[in-house]
Image (tube, rainbow, N blue to C red; front, side):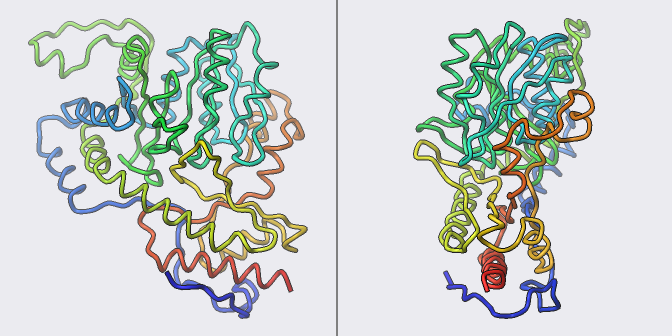
Length: 403
């Protein structure tokens, strides 16, 4: 791997030449000809939705993560909603989660008429801090939703022990963490329910899509019914047995994933190990090359965790670097490095401020992290040259502001 030498050139936002001529996105899907062929074959088949590819994908996915059941959904958000329904979150109920996540994690509680209760995060991994949870549990609490931020598994054992003592369910938001491991166990086989996302920037994609894994057969059955209007059977089963009769047994939604999407997911699943390996290579290169830049903190990996690296979030210490997070963000964009920020804490969004009265300052660790975070480009389709460009841009900026 080539060594990158910091350049003395002016920053692009000050009139210098950008590191890249075209924008490198922070995330992007990777589709090959076999993916396309699998989708075309399904388009020519008898089933476009809720057909044989759905069951095949679910079975292969469950085997991959070591779970007894996998239930597909039209998105990770739909999967979270299904999990919230399954544990019985309803009007007057509560569930505890992280503020440093995409809004869908908390919104699934609202969809059921419940109240999201936030707890602050660890300063190193930015995952939900279990030590802050016990005091928040009330008779109304139904579940805890830890988030595997950026693909680094949450510290799951304390949550599971707490759930056992208090009669709660752990719904793990692993939408960043397909392929991650915690204490030698695969994410997807540990929590009572684990939710994954197949958005195009994730480790595998079905276009849009999601999956919930569980070892609980009752949870799995409820999830299947919930995603299919609350109906107790699907069209393919009825056709197979020559039966027209069906019954709606609960109030569900149309959250089904299609055979077209599952055909793509199956092909992508075959490449998951290679995709994870590439992401880990990129993360290792970033860490070794950027950790020496004054004012930049690279992600910490705890000993018990093997991250999946959906994101590579750095922190900018404005006092040490001499530039704010926003200045560094703009400088990187000017160099055609498509950085992003993950996330505005959920409680600071206008809807949550207005509905629940948050004003800022309630969760200082998450809020301070938000003010310093930048997500560097991280996707398995990145070339070595792409990685070099990100490193060169970071070193160029670091050299500029340290003078």
